[in-house]
Length: 292
Image (tube, rainbow, N blue to C red; front, side, top):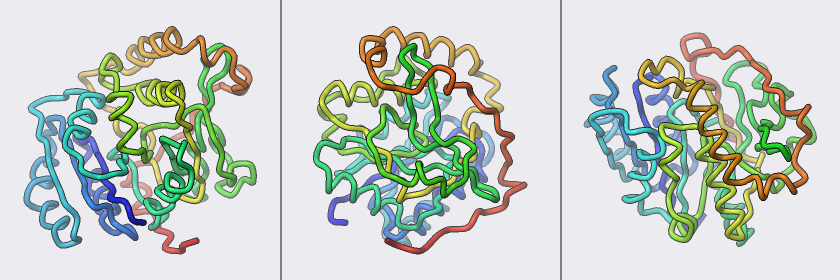
């Protein structure tokens, strides 16, 4: 992997997850060239960890590190945009702080897709639930012709054949993706109308596709996702309301595209609620160090 890589992580409390996320990044093969963390006013000890402690760990791993400390919760969109203003990598990853590395070579695999396919602007991995039998949390995202959302593969076996094939998709979730630096330079940053979160990633995928880029699912890279940790327990935000509001904005903006696409059927877009497990229940999930 020749091109430099930067990873942007937004932190808002949930220190055990942030620690696992960042330390698993440093242990990757390769580790990113740069990690930028934007802390949205955490009050649980995250600020202390993200200061000298993690700075020392990053330095020991040969990884450049930058911390932006916001006084309060600026929202995920604004925080990620702050990160985009200072990253140095030619390839830029968004990773939620409730994410952890499964494939140690995840960054090389995703970067390989960008290097091998010039029209791909964004590439994302297979996301897994972080407990046995490590079923699929998301294998790309589809949008029906009425604007309903389907997480492909949700709840299915990790090795389900249809989700082991790389392919172009309508959308990815920004829980984890890698994109070209050229993309935000051409289409701009995340739209902060979607603050604090929800649908900003799908909106960005459609903006990229409207500009002529492809969005690509690459199952050769696998990551764990402690689903909804980033948003659960946030007393200052009504995420049910935000999801409905932002969903309407997304549908109004992109109906002209998804209404004529060959997306999933509405009946396939029923959300399957799967009981999540916290890190206190799962422990640290295993890393796959195999390559190729």
